[in-house]
Image (tube, rainbow, N blue to C red):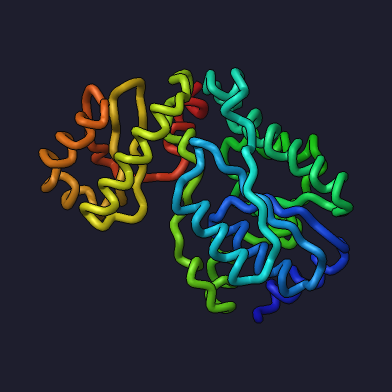
Length: 266
């Protein structure tokens, strides 16, 4: 165990008990591992709605079993929020406000002293309105408090031999929708099926299918763009069958948070 992980585990021991928001991504899974090493009473809770990538929920279930951490799946509730579905630039606030509110109630009713999430220092570099919800609900971010960047987490996860160490970032499916494009169960399913098809057909793990209002824009890493273009006809045909009116390939390649550029330019 590396020094940063050891310091994190010591930090967690002081918390006594915790409910962890477990998305199934690298950050929260690594934090769950550290919690298991700390020995404090822990309940990991995963929100599951139409916005949840299937693979993330599967990883949440698998790793909680592997680490022997009690795990619960709940409806996080954001799909019942009109403010969330309207998809303003504050969308993530409404999602996290719903989730954290539920976790705080679980903690209070079941005797856990803290609610934690997997936020890290890199999260402070982008538009993350969910951080405001975390502050309002007094959610603690131990990885942030202990100075972990995303690369620190990957390195520490490798040191612990975690298979998830190289998993690409996997934000919720609502992040695929351009601001102002309403989020619907049908739209979320269409995006999920489109990404699964490209992933399975081309073997590209890190990608996004952005919904720009019925028009799809596919983003893959820059070194995979030519591979995607070579299969363009096949991919376009499939995505149109899923319901997209038009399909384009982003020649620039994938970059996390690209839809937030409109905010930077505003």
